[in-house]
Length: 128
Image (cartoon, rainbow, N blue to C red; front, side):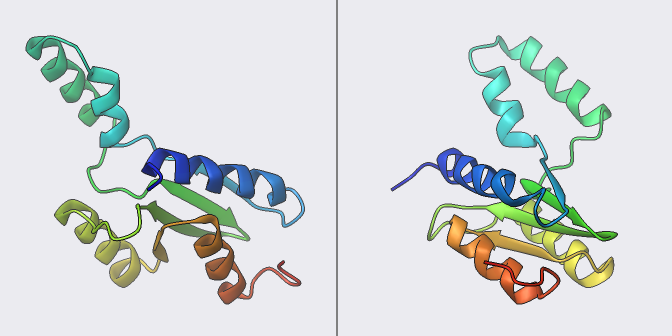
């Protein structure tokens, strides 16, 4: 089974290949997974300091991995391996995004998932 990071790289490559054609921008949101990788091998005191720094800089546990912006709307994508579940923090953020502030948030396992969601949004005429 592919690593989550590999799936995200494939999605990023796909979105990069069509972003200009369909007039959207997207970006990754470095979140706790990134932070944990950055701290790998650090002594405990330095890890704590770095974690505190990232949180002060706005790191929000559970925030989706990718954000796509198109015509004044934001769409969020949480990349997961097939069969993986959202963490509690991710569930809380997805509920907030979807239900309270009207920002669609999706869990995706592949490029095909992203393609299907973008086709369903119907805001991309002739989406292929």
